[in-house]
Length: 279
Image 1 (tube, rainbow, N blue to C red):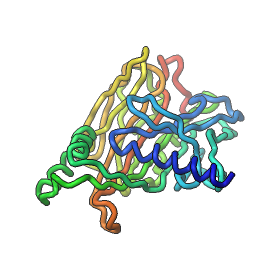
Image 2: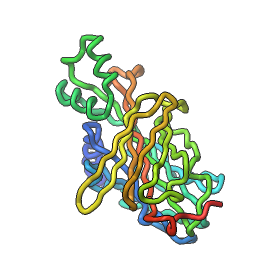
Image 3: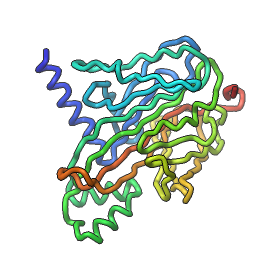
Image 4: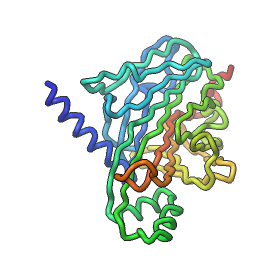
């Protein structure tokens, strides 16, 4: 049994190391709008074009997992088993209002060929890193990267919202809505701030993802000098906002770069009649 578990963890480690080459990693609830008092499932997914493979929760992956609601914080990481994997995490939603779940991964490492690393940097808007590699004369060297995931999802229970959507979780890379997404509707503009180590990040490429009729829509925006970005979201349903931030690695001989992958999922109501009641 132990060997089988270790084999499963090794396979999962491989699967979750692949995202550093332009793969996203996100968290979804069974329902974004559960009834107060319900228990819903949380799942993790890795993939491309907002489609992918579900990844279970397991101790070697989960560095942090917290539930924010009405000014309280509950540590969920203690519920992750030490010697097995958990395909889905049950989350009791005990009261009406906004609920924010934040997930942080342990670091993983990956090495890419120079060409693949350059293409990945360009796709994620990390041209400053391309310039740093050029200045250092390392463009022809493999890309040795250590990456972490800073992931969040928002729920609205009982048809009511509160200011929890704007809670700062302290994640290294964090995407924060500037207004309640559940108080918006299809066609509205939704504004976000992006922070790294608690400070606004300038120029970061943010992407808004949505699946519709089997096609993936991606809208792109760059953060302003104040670390803010705006998206006009044309459709109702599930949306994902993502961003990548990279800095030189300074405490390891096994990687040259540290990257942080921020992600936020939420649901946009179809029209004003379906908007939440803000308390």
